[in-house]
Image 1: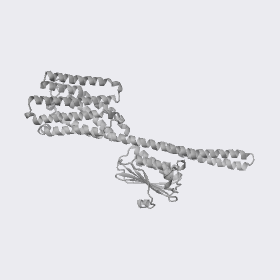
Image 2: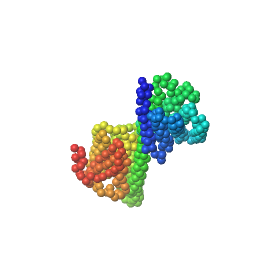
Image 3: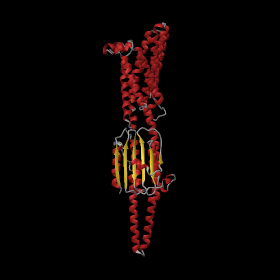
Image 4: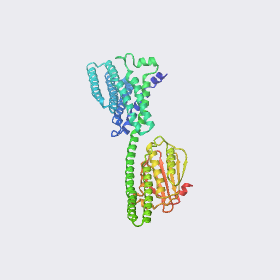
Length: 490
């Protein structure tokens, strides 16, 4: 029987019970960032307060359980009073947690703060008055009943509702396990409304006279403390899992900042290329047409040649503009995997470019990737293929994507003209090498590395290594060894 097991091992169970309260509290205090942009972050310290005060309450219970036979009545009464105060304070923490979680979404319910303050002050005033003038155990049981009905039951209910409201905020990170654990924690709090808030220890007030730990044991055959222990176990587990959201948020903000930096560099590059490339070409076409107008009056044949040349230049400019438009088109990869996204992107590239692109996959993806990782990998690979066409003038490109247990390795090899790697050290005219810098920035954003070898007339070879879990921050580096990629290929 569970009740017999709990009775025989009550002290051990109480010790484990108190440790779990402190574990939950410290998990929140160590990881919770109150400066976070998440509304939930401004309230979770109250859940930590609940864990610490209720853990201290259990320590007092353990002390009474161990030394009760050696204590005088006055000491026992003082310890029971301290136990009541800590327990009630823990319920008040939960009550205010629920208020702040709900107010995070519904400011119009600001009056809940006034109600909460009035109830907290009223309870403490009533208890102090009763214990000062009627210092009897009956009033301790009465105060315990009131603390559950006034704070625990409505507190867990409001907290469950508030946590469920915050699910939509966590969904923005698109990490399913965080959403699942937050929903599970909310459901656990709804169950606690009954197990902790409504089932009283002593039958003093109604409904405690009907629903208390004694009638619960008689009806169910299992002590209510067993269900409270399960509630604490699940709460601690879900809280430890949920506080990961602050680390995810930190990474998300960092990635967002780096993405804005890459976007800024992209805009600068496109602005330079438009100014130094397309605008200059259009200006040249205008000069040819102006010269053709002058020649048309005297030398018609030369004028026609100029006009045909201008038409060819305009067609070239139109092709360049189309290429820029293709680069600027947003790609929504949210519903696809990395493999599907690469296949789709390379397929579209083959249709537009006069170049053979061989795509090879090896192994199986070892871990889940989020949308930020997928988008940046796709865009980095797209940039390398674009460079192979526009600058390297390659005829053949081989893309090899290898999924390892801890990382992804992407190799891109072309047979084009290559370039002098020293040109990356200085700002190239017209932002010519900005595309590669964007590749380095994107890979650094994912805390991966880019190794490459190139030289004039020997093509360009890139190797991108990306960890599934982000460990450090790196960039691109040059390998001055033309045999490196041949060895890797073998």
